[in-house]
Image 1: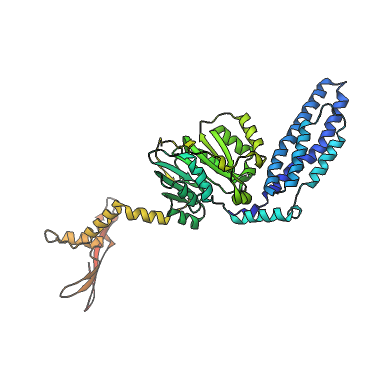
Image 2: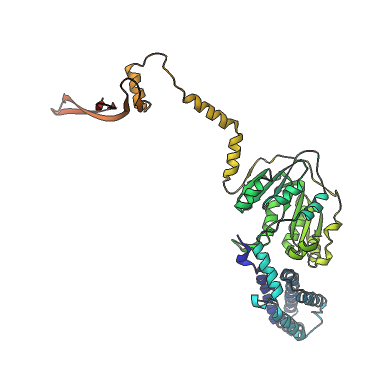
Length: 461
């Protein structure tokens, strides 16, 4: 799938937050008015009004981090800074002590109307960046950043298995595993790139990662740089970087190392939750130079653990990822700080979603069973003579089996074809006790030889 089908996905997310703000502007004064009416006369209803007020405010505050993420993707720095300032005001606003919400709702309405809703409302520079990202299709990790990540790893003194679920041409994983005892595995949906990767990696699965058949808990490291786009699913649009992460976690053995590369603005709350719940020693670093200017990539590195509750860690990480300046550059990533563990099980199954003819041909070429099969076929083709002359019954069996079909060479060469036909014979059995004549039909097989000689055609049977 190409990102060009939904390249302005962030506009859909922005529209959702705008709708939330518009609804808040309507609902907030109504709830406040009801509270003022009930606070002296109906305490129970007044408490319910306050609960409703808290829920509306909570929903509004939760929408702003999502909005900031989409503005980061859009590249509208000025509007993002305005959003951050408004978020700070909303957090400190006295919703209980303030009776008249008119100034607040007016400010929210003006802000919501500034949010872009259509492509023609996006500034030209941001629109060009989004279109370029859409056309790129996929974003392979450059060698300098792979080197920095590789330098942070300590490989064991025995063979390990590493997988890249979106391996592309296999360049990044090949570079990452160079000079190590590693079997490298990759899946790739694009056939041309997958064929290129076959020359670089140990095994490559063709087709969608999500429909591949791969052993779970069998890999010591996952190198994951997924597509940064959305795709249709049963529940609407899904973010592929989120789906790839969810499906890749189960491939790692416990204590295995995850390397996860995405734009910093794609670290949504669900992504942060999956990372915090399933990994310890979790760190994040942003890329530098032109790579960060183009794609705003960061790398998460962590060691897999059994799933745990991590609400507080999730909230802190999510808040941390909203501002790129919070994230240290990858130059701060130390050397030898993550140990790739020794394997606890083998990769028993690794099959891509599509049939790979090239891989099958290579396996057949190396197969001893295939060599033996062809050797036995050569023995079957040699000329053989019976130990004793064939009797009439044996000749009949050979003819019926079809083994006598073809050219018979000799002093009088001829072509012979044997076949079996069904023959019915009627036998008169005589009269039965009622005086009726009984006729019994007998069906038998009859062998016929058709012979073509230089003197003409003959049929023997």
